[in-house]
Image (tube, rainbow, N blue to C red):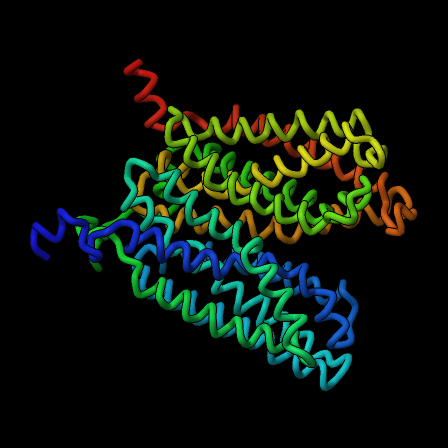
Length: 445
């Protein structure tokens, strides 16, 4: 390419076309995994199983997202084109297969094959697409936006968070407009749409020309060797506080709709859900962009945990959830907690790759980020399940404005989350050391 083309920002050397747009195409597609709650009941009714039985498909999807990211991190490290192609194929194939097994389940009510097929397609195959698709653009973004890593990764990860807000109304319209068998038709149509979006992202995605990945046979430090360049407790602290932030986020977010109904806002649940999704996406972009201007990115996690602890404690002391119906002040406090937990949940995701790069460098960041995402896998199996257990075993369900809710049970979930948030804050202060960048900034002060 000529110097003139470079100066004018030719598309081959344009960071937006080669990194930001493909990242958004990939993340806005795979982020629709969080739309599960929109159609889970409809799937259960259509195939003749309980909602509880079908819920495991979502849990498996999040588990395999984290585990595929952990085990395929090296593939992403070596070849983003291979990993983004794997992501495009697996995500679309998993979604189309889910549609097929829903169709089969509708024709054979109560078929175990249909349920297992959905687990395999939505949980395992889509999960592999989720993990590789989530990782593929992250390192590329940080390489193109070297001085604004947080803004770049926040932009992509915000796409993952915003996907639900974008796709939800489209899915609801499809479910009401496709007639008989709308649920499986929707999956098959969207599989094709998302494959095209992700494949275009795969074709555009490219690392900067100047970046050199070690060639075959060239010595490169292993993942554990890289992690051990800092005290091992440093990485353990990062992994655990990431896990806790996701677990607490999922525990509250999984009960969000019922909490909103509990405080007398049943008529605007959809609006609150959309606002929550905006806070989730905004937290991903805002916290990470803000961290670009901080000496130590770990400060962002300390802020997230402090804000979450303070708001949780206020709602606990005031009994906001169980006493909120008809009390505007308590309603505002509960909504503030819900929105800020969503923002902190999103911010935790967008800051982890840049925090890791500050501590361990860019050489093996995809592989280290992948292993760290295993925390997401385990949180996906624990966060909402523990919250559901607390709600089912404590308090009692009663009718509030025509809706059966368990105010005491939802309130008790906060005792679980506040303890974990305090543990996470201690970990971020004691275990996670200042990065080299932070130490250098302190030295030059």
